Amino acid sequence: MAQDPELDIDTSSELDAITVFSSSNHDAEMEATAIQTMLQSNGVDAVIVGPSVLPSLEFQVQVPRAEAQEAALLITEARAAGPEAAAEAEAESEM
Image (cartoon, rainbow, N blue to C red; front, side, top):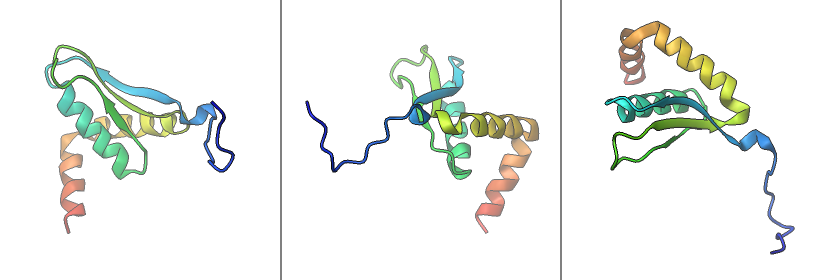
């Protein structure tokens, strides 16, 4: 199938999805959602991959390859800051 020359499609590997979080714990879906939300609020595109009907399988948060390093740093910083920092940041965003 020939590609339409008018479409501007980026075929570089920079958009390949990279897993930055993975878990099959009982709270994996909730943690994946929290990580996705935190990344998106910091300008990193992120998607959750996982089966919501089979909770024993793994949930993942994936980001474009070009944003993987920034995403990993943001996750590390958020975990180091703890839940108190997340609650404080949420309260500030509601003002």
